[in-house]
Image (cartoon, rainbow over all chains, first blue to last red; front, side, top):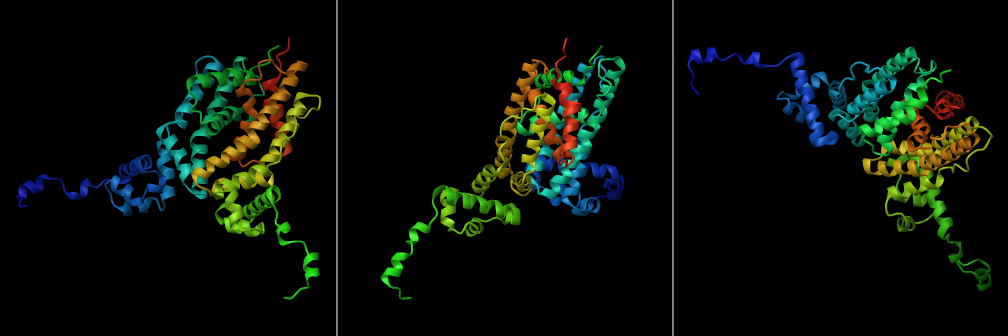
Length: 208
Length: 208
């Protein structure tokens, strides 16, 4: 195609169309998530991700030496943050709202992608992905549960010895257990029941 | 080889050396467990199991159409039974002893074999093996926890509304959670801590 010099000058040079740094990385991570949801772990390839991000394979490999590395980062980056500890004025309500957020993270698109990847991948990759769940969802939630419980102790609603590691694990353990063993997706009503039947008796001060 | 008729008559006929029914099946299941502990799920073959049981491949396939079927039965048959609910006179002690038995089952040789098989196998087989854990270890334990809790209610030590499904899941959930997330093998001291910090506050009657 013949174009005049002035038309060529009007178009930005090719080089400035190249995405760099965080923008390109974001595109690659998004493409990886897209691939995960369409073809799954087994179907995902570095070439497919590169194509989805409209970039070359080299740009992907330069930053992520392996499929595992790429998917770990993609999932980590996509997991919804748990934000701050809810403060609705009562421990029961705060725990309820916090569990709903934990449920939302577990069953978010990346949360579900994470769980289905765990089904498909080998043991080594599975360990790395379990670690994403632990560091990205569970540990942050434990810190927030602790904050809610401390506030409840301050109000006199929660027994003072309720901040040990085991007690703070009960709720995450229940949520992981029922989701794994019963396939529960923890609808609001089930969360409410767990808070009322388990968390309230477990945490309440013996008041005297 | 030429033998006299009387020598031949003195030897038992070949047919009676063949093991039948339960004896042969036991030998095959034992050989499957042996293979699992030496070469794992991936290394286990029907031929290898048959050889280990000193029988032919056909005898194995006749009863177990697939590797999955065979390993499910072998693990199920080998898991130690939880026996009856302990009765040591106090809910705290009963729960403690019951958890120790649950721990012993989870970390028995077949329990560990089960968990390592879960790492190696595909998603379909994994679902079947998870089911072995559920039906062979967890559900029986829930029934025993219920018995202990009922006895505690009878003594006035446990609150009357503590027999709902969620409350009874807390201990199995904690044991599965810590073993999975922290790699804990639940030594006696950790079980005692869980009973004292979590189970006692959770179950105790509010007494008035």
